[in-house]
Image 1 (cartoon, rainbow, N blue to C red):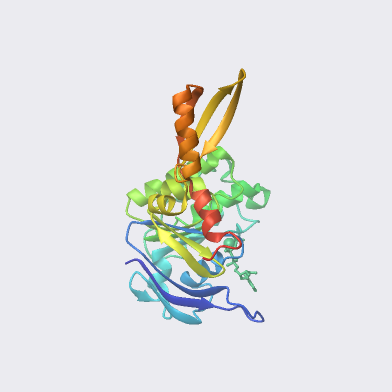
Image 2 (cartoon, protein in one colour):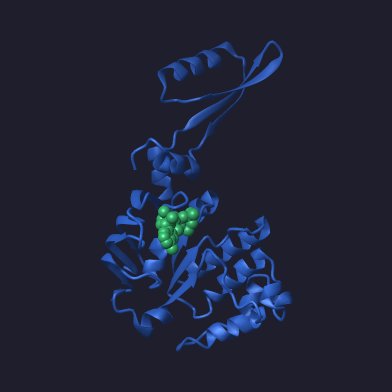
Length: 286
Ligand SMILES: Nc1ncnc2c1ncn2[C@@H]1O[C@H](COP(=O)(O)OP(=O)(O)OP(=O)(O)O)[C@@H](O)[C@H]1O
Ligand SMILES: [Mg+2]
C-alpha cells in the first residue's frame, strides 16, 4: 500500500466541527485514486495532513509504509504536491522557480526546462512568474510537483482555471506518470477527469467518506440508466426520458415501440456527476 489512512479526524483551532471525521481508505501502488466531494468537504484538509502540512491530530497515516508522525527527509523526497492555490515565487522566472525547488531535494531531479516545455511553458520559461496568468501559474505548480520524480503524487485541483487544451495536456501527463508507476492522489471537481483517470474514487461529504469504489461500480450502484426516445406526434418531434426501472415508463416504452411513432431511441449511461449529486446531495444520507 502506498497510502494507508485509518480513522483520520481533524478539527481546525476555534472550530467546533470536524473538518475530517473518521476517514479510512487505502491507495495501492500505481493506482490513480480520485478524491471527490463538495466545497468544504475536507478534501484539501486531508491532503494537507497526508503531505505533512497539517499535523496529525487523530488516527493513523502511513505513506509508503512510513508513519506520517515521523516524516523525515525520505518522505519529503518521495512525494510531489500540487496545491489548489498556485503559490510560486513571483519575482523568479518559471525556470528559476523550478531550479530552486530542484535544489531542495537529495535525489535525482527532472530537468526544469524539459518539465516547463512539457506543461506548455517553454516559451515563457524566462519570464517572471509574477507576470504569468492564473492558468500559467497553475501549470508551473503542477510542473514543480514533478521536479523530484515523486513515487506518490498529490494533486489538489490540478485543472482548475485551465482552458480545455491545457486540461487535456494535464490529463495526458497524469496518465503518462501513472504508466511510469507513479501513485496518484487526485482531488478534483472535474467529473470527466475523475471518471476517465481514476481506478477508484472516494466521495467525501462533511468530512466522511460516503462511497468508495471504481467509477463503473459507483455508476451502476447510484446512477440511473435511462432511455431517451424521440417520438413524432402531429408532425412534431418530442423528446422523452424514460427509466427502465419504472413500470409505468416500461409500459409507455412498449406502447411507443408497437405504435411505430418512435424516431430514435438511445440508452443514456449514468455519469459520475449523477453519483456525486446522489452521494453528496442535501437530504441524502452519506
Ligand atoms: N485554515 C482553516 N481554518 C479554519 N477552518 C478551515 C481552514 N481551512 C479549511 N477550513 C474548514 O474546514 C472544512 C474543510 O475545508 P477544506 O478546504 O478541506 O474543503 P475542500 O473539500 O478542500 O473544499 P473545496 O472543494 O472548496 O476545495 C471547511 O468547513 C472549511 O471552512
Ligand atoms: Mg480544497
